[in-house]
Image (cartoon, rainbow, N blue to C red; front, side, top):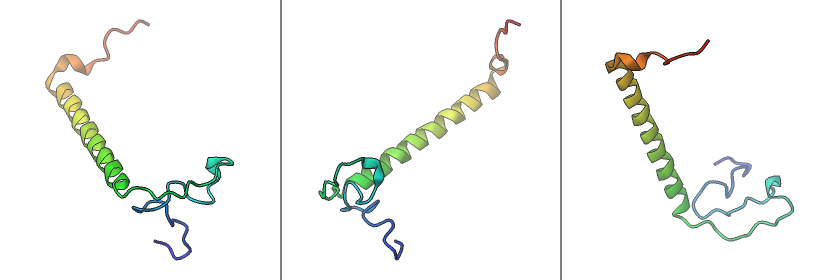
Length: 79
C-alpha cells in the first residue's frame, strides 16, 4: 500500500464499494458501505478460472491444427 493513500479502500477486503474522490461515479455519493470480504477472492477465482480455460482452449486449437492437415488452410477463398 502506498504511503499517500492513493490505493486506500480500493482493492482490499473491507474497503469501500466506491472510492471517495473517483469522478467516474458522476454526482453520486459513495455508499460508505464496506465491501464484503468475499468479493476480492471471488473475483480473483473467476479471473483465474477464466484464464485457465482460455489457455487450455487455445492449446487444444493449436494441437488440432498441428495434428489435422485439413485445418491448416483457410478454406475456400473467393477472389
